[in-house]
Image 1 (cartoon, rainbow, N blue to C red):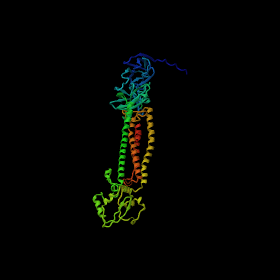
Image 2: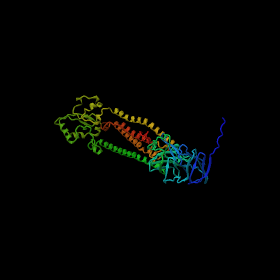
Image 3: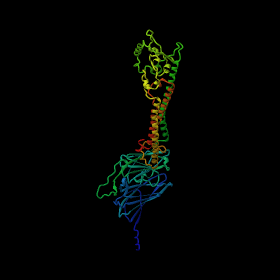
Image 4: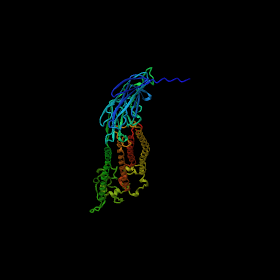
Length: 590
């Protein structure tokens, strides 16, 4: 069959000269295209925003009205009713739509720019209202608050230019109402501007907000030294913790039919203020380091003071051991003068509190017995007859020099029998059951295990915590680096839960101050390890000197346990710093 001739195109195009701040009430159908021509002057050093507002009065959801704004370097198009999708592909329709036009740059001092608004539809008849206005306070000023309204179909965005000498600013947006949920976005000066709920995440940095939001912006990230602050109201509140709206329950309602949300309007207030300077960064870091390094200085001072005390005590002991010129005997210096309590291992735990009454009772009971006397450097057993004069025990013990006490064999006793009257046990030096038969016991005598066994046992704590720290910290560090990279690349600041009003970035880190606050754990943990290392060195030196206090006083030393505690304190600071790189539900366990 022969093809039928096509009917002649009957569409009419009507060009209209239009002016700002004038509301045009008109109609359009499938055969009519209305074109509104606007012009305005643009200055190089002044930026003015232009906003197009439309309201379709006809209810033709299947045949919407299409608005196309043609500019010098950009094209903006949208339909009314505007359909936005939410969670689970829900549709929401908006009859009133307002969009701010992207402002092209000009190199001339003054330039007249033209733009056109085309209105068309495929419906039989659609009535609408069109109004184009200038945006007041389109350029935000530093430290000045500006209030405005926004809806899901009427987003707002403003421009901010960095002043001279300001390298970083913080954009604060507040609202008295938590819902509806909104999104704050920082975008570069490019066309088009993504200012709808379904495309606001395509570029720049963004975060959701209820009542407060803050984004720190650095000058180095924007070559033009300026950026847009975009505010979008979301179609649903689920992302902010709100409830999802219910679909209307009616027989004629379809799941694919858009839902009219009526008026989801939010009142907001924005203010841009400078952040702290680089000098403040350096000063804060040095202040924190100074506080924790003061603990090192205090510890060093106490160590030097204690070392001086030890040197003074050694000098007094040396003077005491030197023989007197008058008597030829060693000098006796009271323990109280040396700054420590009297130590007498012979009387430990055997005669109550060691009172004078006990000493007298010992003297009386031993009046007719065989009493051993220990002179300098040797043991001699002498028999005394009952008629021989009895010297008091306290006088006999007082004549012993501290050198003889410190150098005596560990198993000395006050037994009155001769050495050949009893059997010598070869295992008396290591069998604790035999040692417990002594009349005078020290705390160290009650330890069942050998010191070398205990030392290796307590070292297990350190190696366990070191192994756990290495295998736990490696994946943690890799994960938080990945998180921070994703935040920097995508611009989604909802991934990490910072206190954005107090977050100060440095380099690629979004909140450097939160990481710096864990410095105390690491520095004080390291100081704790150094103190334990010094104590262990002193203890080992005392053992090499066969010091009586190190051999017989106190419980077994647990240096391995203390090393584990210091390592755990340092790892607490490291893993807490890793958590604060990007705090969220996933890495909260760190």
